[in-house]
Length: 269
Length: 290
Image 1 (cartoon, chains in turn orange, blue):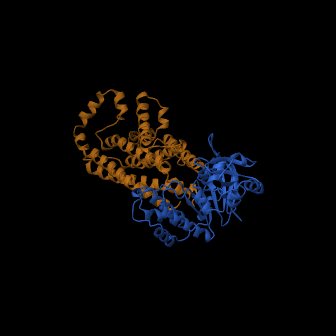
Image 2 (image 1 turned 30 degrees about the vertical axis):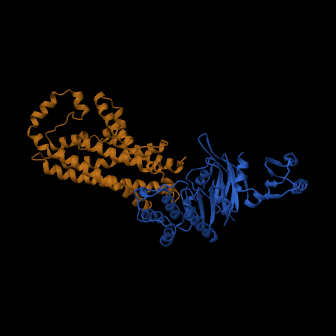
Image 3 (image 1 turned 45 degrees about the horizontal axis):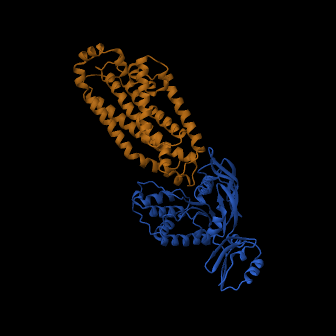
């Protein structure tokens, strides 16, 4: 770890972290603030949902969800929070090494007296800190807004905490996978399409997996590994699936170090 | 002691040729010129020394140590000015220089300001607002601020105006006088001729000649001009003569061989003027590439 690289990287992330954190907090605010009007017509709402085709409900992750309780409702909206967090993390992962190579600043950094392992570690820690800051904002705003808008719907603390904590591993997945993909391809022209692709792609896999009742797909996507409805309903993580996420993270990071230390840095031709 | 040593260094990018079997040494305190046209492998060679890329074959040492294994440690004493300069666009010049300085063990503040003053660099501008020439100046300052013992200059003068070029050459000569070894890559032969004692000529990835500039000139052909009232070009068509040109009252040709044979041929004519010149590096260079 080199403090100067960490600082430099962290500064580069700062504006993006603020944007993401504020946006996600606003999303949570808007969604939770309309809960009380939902809850008023809860019986009506659940009745209406019972009439929807099941395929539609599963596609939106609404199957077996009780929107009349604050946690059931929050679990549903949390899918959108996850989607944002996934894209943010994938964005940092894809950009970590590729941006310097695309903008040709890699020559500057790598000609300095510092090894590649140290460079990657410093960059990873800076990205991780940026993600953690976002997570803390998500945690605080979730707790504050839930308690502010829950009306008379009581909730259990345990499932909520498990749900909130899950986003750390969830984001690490997208960070690590984004990084390793960026090192496997020769060049990434623009980070955003890749990040959106990975984020939405994993979400779509999860939604389609539900619709088709296909359980193989759930092995791949962290939207399944950390399914908010599952965590809310069971008050626990789906441990085997979570372990898949952890394994993917470990393998991706290990592969990233190997690939990065052997990488030929492209030059202007 | 040789500061740089390349042993059969080879680099392929997939199937594309980078450099092939390049071997040479650069001694301490020397300014070594590395010349060749675009795409010959000059940048590839430098980037191998800096471990920005890894060789397909062969090896290289700097200060006697393997340049990959001891890369980070060696780079404490290496300065690098790339041919194309790119820095973090949103940073201010001063912040970039400070960031650069923060990698080195020694305190670089004083030298950084000296160099910035010398190159007339405005420290509070953003990198993105700088012209190419000014970015190049940033490159020069960041490459020299840690007082390296070895300098890699990759086509360093591109983008600098003539005044700045002169300052830059003075700066490099001063550094060299302090004992700094310089590896100077360029396709501008005039500046190589002026700065370097020894040159390596690279062609299509292979080192085709390594020699002192003086021996290169002396062992090469001479440029001969003979002026006379009545001239027969065929008279000069002796072994060793090439590029014979006959214009109105004068004959020009290149000659390689025994100078006495040349003198005897010339003395057979009543001449009004004779010049025998050594070729410029440029002419030698062109000769290698023809």
